[in-house]
Length: 151
Image (cartoon, rainbow, N blue to C red; front, side):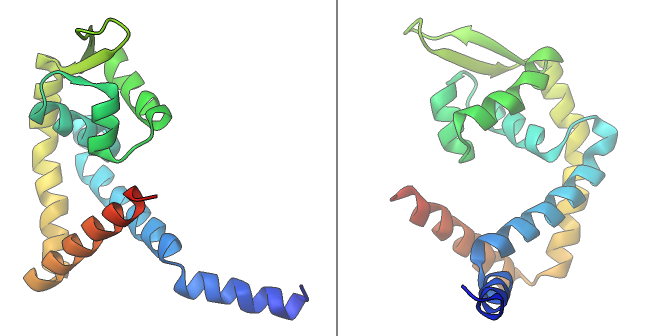
């Protein structure tokens, strides 16, 4: 491939690649939520795990990974500090080969401390987008997740 062809291809990817645009948006939005929740001592990724556990009190790792659209390795990396800090606890499931996870009382308190920051970050984005844009964005993102699950 010539240098000129490579430059054209790079421009095409930079300007049109949906994965790149999604990663850029995800990094920017994640940083905003992280900043708003910093005083609670947890990051947005941790908050997402804690919220999922608040909705499913005792959930196996495979199901938690599925709910969070996260591979098990990434989920393990995200669970480690939560387990270490006593926000989450691991239990044996009926099948002793399976570990199930639950939110602890301390984890619930962390969620409660983080909620005002989350609400603030959420309000900032809601102000930036109209109601119809938020609905459309949610619909598009859900559709993108579903499209990748058929692989």
